[in-house]
Length: 338
Image (cartoon, rainbow, N blue to C red):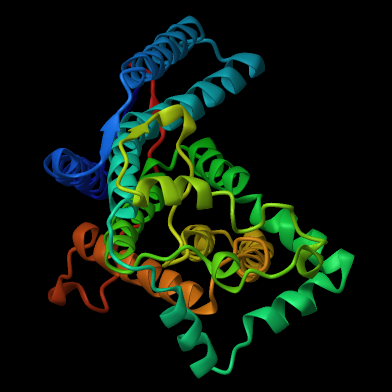
C-alpha cells in the first residue's frame, strides 16, 4: 500500500527530520561538556524499538497484501485497519528518533548549574494576584474536584495516543503530522527555556505539609525531584532511556499539549468541545497535581501558540493572489493498493 503525499505532508516530514538533526547535533556537542553520559544499555533498547517497528511494518504489509482485491466486508475492514496501522507506523518512524534526541537534550538542559528560579516564578504569580498555596487548599478541600484533576492530569499519555489513532483511523497523515510536528517544535523550545530558567516546581519551593494535598497523589509534583537533584549535583549521571521521566517545570508541557490537542481537534466539531473541556481541566490540574506555578501555565500556552505559528509558516504558503479565491479542499491521504 502507498500514500498520495501532498506538499503539506512533505514539508511536515522535512521539518521533523531537520528538527531531529538539530536537536541530536546539539545534544552530541553538549554531552562531552556535561556530567551526563549515555548508559550502554541504551543500544539494546534502541535495537529492540527498531526491530519492533520493522516487524510491525512487515506484518502490516503482509496483511494488506493478503486482502488486496478482496471486496468482502471483513476484507474492507481489515484494509481500513491496515491503513490506520500504516499511518501510525509512519509517525513512529519520525517520532522515535526525535524522542531519543530530545530526551538527551532535556536531560542536559536540566543538568545545568544555574540557580533555581522558583522564587522568581512564585513572585510572578503573586504579581498576578495568584496564591498557589491557597489554590492548593481550595482544590484539596473537595475529594471529587481533586480526583477529577488527578485523573485529567494523568490522562495525558492516553490523550496523545487517542489523538494519533483518531487521525490515523481516517488516514489523515497530514493532520497527524501537523499534531506531532507542532508538539515536537514546542518541546524543543521548552527544552531551551528549561536550560535558561531552571526550576524545581511549586511543591519543592513551598514545601506544603502532606495534609495540604492529601487528596492528590503522594508524590504530586515531586516525582522528578530526586532525578533533578542528581542531574544538578555535578556527579556523573547515566541516562537510561527506559528510566527517563519528565523533568521540565518551566514552562508547563502539559499545558502546551492541552492547547495543541485542542487545536488538533479543531476540524471535528462533534468532539472538539468535549476535548476542549478536558484540556481546560487538565491544564488547571497542572498546578495542584503537577506542581507547576501559574506562570508555568502561561508560558506553556504561549509557547504552544508560537509553535503553531512556526509550523503553519513552514507548511502553508501565503499566496496573495489566491485571497478570496475558492481553493480546492485538502487532499485526504487515503491508502491505495499498490
